[in-house]
Length: 382
Image 1 (cartoon, rainbow, N blue to C red):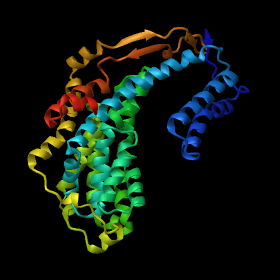
Image 2: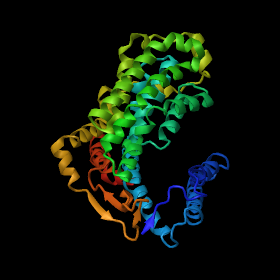
Image 3: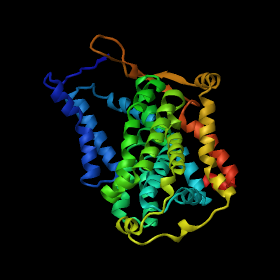
């Protein structure tokens, strides 16, 4: 039986924490400083963690491989499982060009670049964060803003800042689902704690985005920015406390966009001086296309299906039924106890077969393929 030592390095909690942080620091340095590819940086961090475990924490030799297996399982399920199915839905919308229809429906709200920053980077970025996450919102929204005439660097900054609000519940709530499953804490508890902090960011971020035009942008567009941020924050808080963490970003994105549409000031044409100071003068002609109403409805269908399915999954009777499929396994050869001799919760592996975001997104993807007219062979290829 391995006893978990909380301060193995020189009996000092500070030094122990610094040594334990070395693998994470190495990974961040390789990614941000050396610009090493992510999988190579991850493997290097894994090697560093193994060395820290053997030399500093003094794990029993031969058990490191066994200890890595639970982390690998968690990486594959639910994290990768959620990402694969979410990206599957997104790629089908791209294949049928309904992603462009959805983008144009957002952009058509206003020709003011400051409002477009809110619509594209904040609202639409939150929707992408919910359905895909993991960098997709920043990459896609940056390209969309450049197509609207934003300077590339400014577009990247706007997209990065906007992603601060929805990132906590990105990829169908992966950032809260994973720690809940890893610690054994109820998902509702973890989600509600996070959901009471992130709305504060949602109130501030829109004001920062309209600051793309400096003080003038804040002075002239603070009303729609505040309305968008407030609606976003309320929806995010309500979803995490009373509905589902997986729906937090979807509901918040749609609420923020609806708030912007309801504010008359958001639809006021921007003065030419504003457009000249924010935009480069280039603009994609595709954004001026008009789409049939039926196509716009179909473009919103994937998000609607996700909302419906996750909402049904929160009905107590359905939730209990889904929870019955969850399986719990004892991890072999990983007998770990705390200093008082009590087994730690990490010795058990919980596998929510159906009651997990990735599995619930799967029928939404099947429905998306049917509504968008994607052939089964093409859908599987995506």
